[in-house]
Figure 1: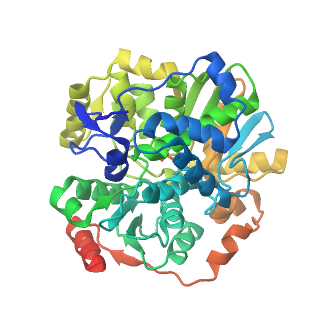
Figure 2: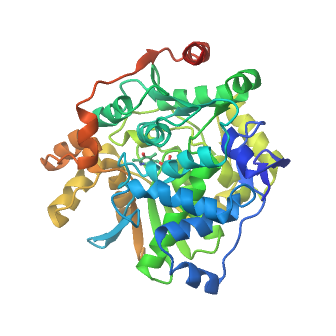
Figure 3: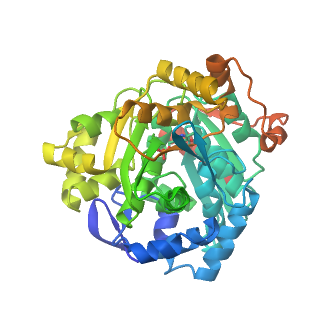
Length: 458
Ligand SMILES: *Cc1c(COP(=O)(O)O)cnc(C)c1O
């Protein structure tokens, strides 16, 4: 399987290359040159598999050049042994909505599902055998802890996690800053998540620096994250057992919902993918109006979605623009130079074939959490609440699944405000809460960050 860049189709990388690099050298995102399409009887066969076996089948399509089926099976089984459930996810009926709980991993984040696999891939692909790899990642709260849990104590790997200072929840920060051993460095940036993400992208684009530190990334722009997330769309479809289903996805960087789009491309009968945003609604705006224009980040009750530069959207653009790499490159150049780009009517209609988008305000988020609790005696977190809220705003939806992306305990202040209830600490987290926190506050400045990293790895 050969991988190209959204901005240059002539690039030719293998899975191991793109795994390690994360971002293409031209600043574009990696995509496979082809996507396997399953027919009905192949889907029927997949439907009989356990979660881990299904993951092996799906992932093998994208990485068989570098990993054998046996290697993949053993690393996936190992990755999921620390989950609460053998089947990794739980699916429940809450009122008339199917809830897909993705938060039963070691840090109670849906990001654990991909990150635990990725941690094992670093070892299995032997990328750090000769030279230490320095992973640099930006987080809006949950990626950081999931990455730390996955890479803690791994040989020849350091992890630098950039989070926006004072803009994540207390529980999120505590998990991140208490579980790391001495290969983990937490950096609180004096800025927003978009600043953290921009710094990481800039560092990747500085060839000298990237090579000097043997830099790697595990943000949701890393294709390995996406392929791990495709699996639960298949698993849920088989579990629900209906002809066609829709998914409502709390969205920030467009990674999770993009995995659903790839699942649909692979032949899974998905009707609509619903993009649920909070007040940082760039995706809702681009899908409904065609204008992609990042605004200032507004802190919200669902901080993991407080994102205005939604990186994975570029991967959708590539297909919407009929795989015209030059057109993608020119839109991304507009974004950089003029601060926005605009899609035409046909392009918007193309997107609307697969997607719907709704924005959920903080007030709506609170009332949804309350309503679900009052009616169903069930507590959802503010991110999951946006997925519920988006479903409620759309008529004519049948058999819809809301993705539950975080455990409510992580946002207990918000949940308490909405319901008056205090969420009990899940046992996985008890061990983090009493330890000392370890993080450094650094200016929102590329040179300062580079200096910090070089200083730590000397
Ligand atoms: C990361 C995250 C999201 C957004 O996922 P994307 O793949 O960036 O769209 C939503 N909810 C929670 C709790 C998250 O941690």
